[in-house]
Image 1 (spheres, helix red, strand yellow):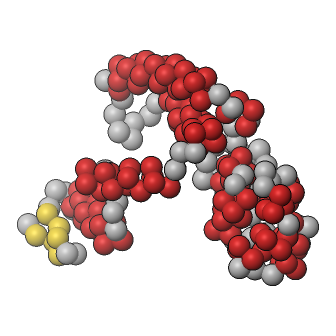
Image 2: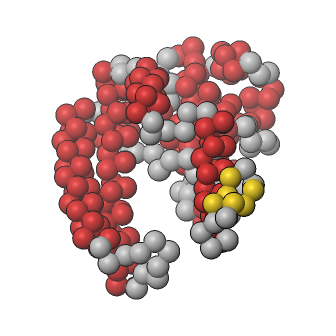
Length: 222
């Protein structure tokens, strides 16, 4: 794996085993603290589990995710996702003890994100796709983008707090959200849909390269 400093990760890939071990040994339910229980749930041997915790080998991402879910440690899960560059750093779990506090924070961050988006709309009037951004505008854009990223963290923290305190079924939430997103056409719903999108972009770019000629299926039409 690449150097963690270059990856902007707070945790090292070499710490995956340690994270998973801490999660297991400090599981809320006593039975989930045993190597035997976790290994059986994951379908691996006790020896392999021991090797992973000792850092002798890193587990595949999917196995590490399932490990965290079996134990019910979502702070560990966020750490694993962050190591693999699939999420922000884990929120301090002590901050998640109050759902109302997280909801208030979400509202505040949403208001900040709206203001940032409005400012970016004003900036966009002077921006062109692919154009050079001057240093002043770039600094301002980075700050406003950070405000928007704050909203993502706040939303994830609020949902995590609801899962932790109100037993929110996040898998059901994600299933329902995905179904609605497919219906609304805002997600790539299949590999074939992805191919159509890439083909369209490819032929559009090819057409531009040929001075505006129309290209379809790899054939140039004048």
